[in-house]
Amino acid sequence: MLQETALAVVKHIKAFKYDPKACSFKSWLLLITRQRIIWQLRKRPSERLGQIFGAQARETSASQAANDGTRTATIERVPDPGGSDLDVLWEVEWQKNLMATALEAVKQEVSLLQ
Image 1 (cartoon, helix red, strand yellow):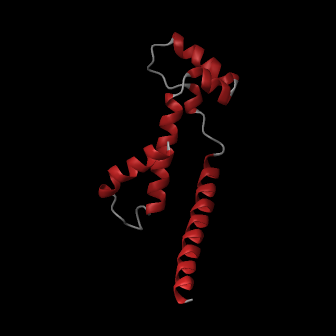
Image 2 (cartoon, rainbow, N blue to C red):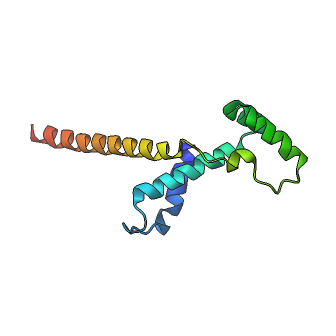
Image 3 (cartoon, rainbow, N blue to C red):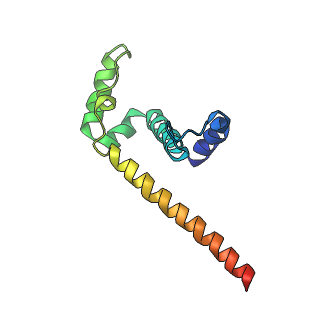
């Protein structure tokens, strides 16, 4: 999935227009990452969804089999209560990576001075 996300970034980076009022690069990257996660989950067979989400997903799969395929699955209509946690996690990881990058740059500068 990391490769697919990186390829999507490379493919769409030319269309990205930096405008801090509209969207930061970080939020744009998070959007692409979220889309890749959602697409990966949709590709999984319904049995796997049952393992992930429990009996509710199995019931949803059974009801979908009886319907003509035009309805959205119940599991996809339920809001993710942990959705905002992804934003917090993303920010923490972003800050860690910024710090690691900055520390590496400082280490290189210091090693050049010695």
